Length: 336
Image (spheres, rainbow, N blue to C red):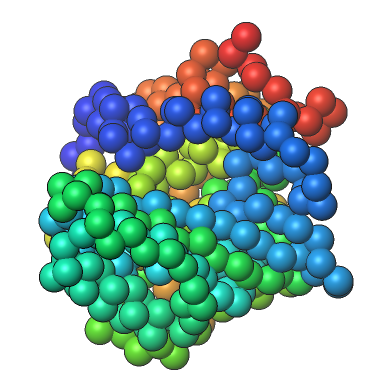
């Protein structure tokens, strides 16, 4: 495979889906780090908030849909709003209980397409939409859609618990096709039954409950390498990633694939002695899974292509979300 590392690094570092994560730091600092205390566990970049409940944990997450997608492809946006929130819950080792939405759309035809997409998404992933709020008078050029979801987990997968020496594992369903036009995406959900989709997703809580991994994230609009890098940033770690180890469909160029929004794509940090068990669980479900790198104590993410290597992120000076965990000090800012 002919790979230009400089082009790959430049594409990832300047990708819109990753750059739009940068403002999170200030909001997180004000509302979470220095916000109202409660029953929740400390959050260090998790895909859902965690509230201890009975013998397990309630998981609470929310996602907003990009305006460009919502305007150009309202049906796809409705489906995506369900998928992304459902994936957030599974990526934490949980199972969804129900969702609510807030939809602003002043155009009746547009609104109907969004609602139909939401309905289809709920049916495909078997999660009920139990309520919400509608703004029917929003201007046609500025619709908005956000979905919140509640889930429950017995054991957790976190964003900040990658450890030096862990294997980085990427699991992806390659049996799909290019997705919606408004973002670079891979659709591995269409054409599959609800039972098939849930059988795949059930792997995540099984991994958590079998304690095969502690750290995981779902690959969303930050792309594959962006999502891995966020998990490493949250964990205060780095990694060496072998580009030729990353599973990829033949019909997509590598540079596009690495920033691709995945309908079913998850990254894990796994102790090497448990890697084969994780891979085997996905193999049973015909999900392509591979070790793509190693976690290091050095806060630098390096990409390798044979003997050549380039730095993707140096978290001693770079930020993506700015959210970093240290086991002795909790949340720290390593750039100051």
